[in-house]
Image 1 (cartoon, rainbow, N blue to C red):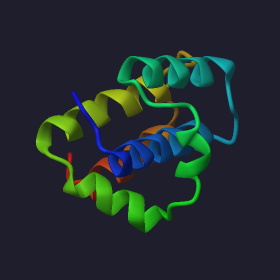
Image 2: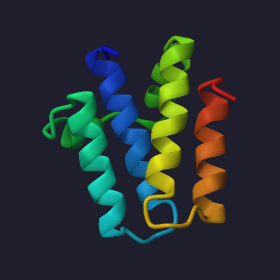
Image 3: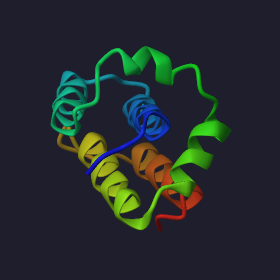
Image 4: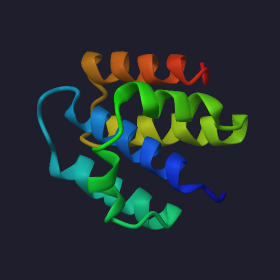
Length: 105
């Protein structure tokens, strides 16, 4: 699946938010994010760039993505959230909020 630059930035921003949701950054979460970015062929330099877009901007971008990309987003966010072996309440709530705003749920 090919993503344009704005979609890549929005997805990275969403993945980072899930990692930060519980206030703890686990190595397993960073590892899975790196692996997913490698698989998706997202350049690591985009991480810094993704931090410059607002929450409203990235959620608007996600909302405009086609259904198949929203499905992929659902999988990505759940993989990141569960990377440390547990998907806690804060992570689940944030994932649900992101997917609802993206109209993927």
